[in-house]
Picture 1: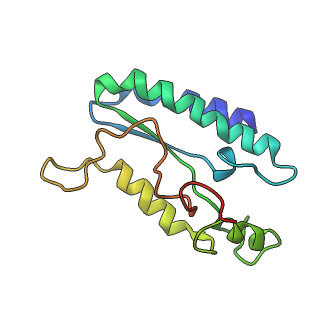
Picture 2: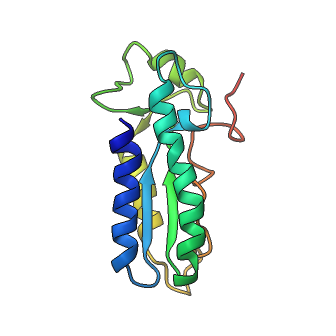
Length: 148
């Protein structure tokens, strides 16, 4: 797991940075348990995904002078074949979100696409100054915390 979730991401980022032009984007996909306590048996998974934060922040500093931004995306529970919205862990996952539901894969991909797009100077939404941090508005959590 560490070889895929950590080493592979590090090597891919290093290779991309070597050929990327000014204004490029590096986006990694993590998970919410890397910021919050995961479930029983999830230690290795959460640890491997947490390593992305350790990679992202210094990489953002290194590549910032070249206008390259680096973003981790850490969604909450997403309805997938491996994590179905009606599966055995779904009730607890939904209860930990502000909207009491799992996200859809399309919601995650649209966020990633919005981070990847270089906005023109005239656009009201610019993300060229935002790097090294996960999008705060996308975790299905109130104020970044589990709801009680």
